Image (cartoon, rainbow, N blue to C red; front, side, top):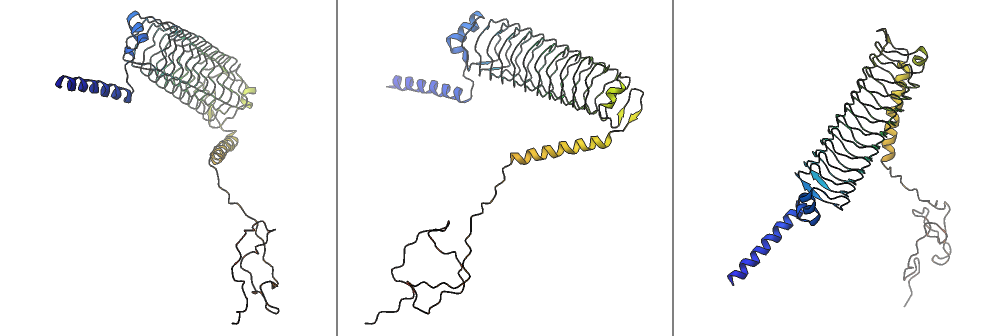
Length: 374
């Protein structure tokens, strides 16, 4: 009897431990057959590892080519020198994970999270990182040629000396990011946000930054041959020693920008907004301050209008109201001859043809009926 109770207690203890692990989301993936094979051999190409939990695992040099790691949680693990080409990492969480020297060519990592991760010297040609989050990640000396980063988050990313040639960076949030000495040639950076970013000595030749926000960015000695900055916000940008003669700047706002020792043509100066702008000769130009103020007011107005559109406004519904008649009304069925109706009717007549007609049950005793004599 005691042995049975002991066995039952052990079973309940094991079940409670498993339920607790599931509840806390840290069920060890190492108990599965595929994980056991992966951790034992270091190779599991084309494996289906969906929803896996790999916490603090050492998977350096592992072969995961073509593997499916979508929706997986890989936290603080080591995947340096791993083979992940054509792998699927969509919706995965890879925070604080090391990918240094890994092969991520043609990887799919849509909406994946690499927050505070390490992707140094990574090869990721034609990888798809749309809407991925790289906040605080370190991506030094990596190659992202023709990769897709549309609507990704690059805030506070350190990506100096990296290659983004022909990469899609449209709508990317890269505020306070560091792209010093990086190759950003021919990128699609339409409406990219680079406020406070550092692009010193970066190569932006042929880059499309139409309507991009570069406010407060550092562009010291950056290459801008053929760069497109149409309608871009270049407020307070440091263009010191930058050659802008081959850039397309139509409609760009250079208010408070620093063009000291920069090279720019007179024709270009006529096509941009200059307000408290430091010119190449050190003088301050204020010719477009009124226009800059108008543009700023327009931006504020559009933002407020957009916010109002998002907030639905409830409009009261005006129901039709029937005007009561002004003349006295005599009802031959309920009134004796000579008896007049009340001088003023406080409610609309209950007419079946009226749009607000409500059927009522007639009273059992007609109004204004003389009492019956016994």
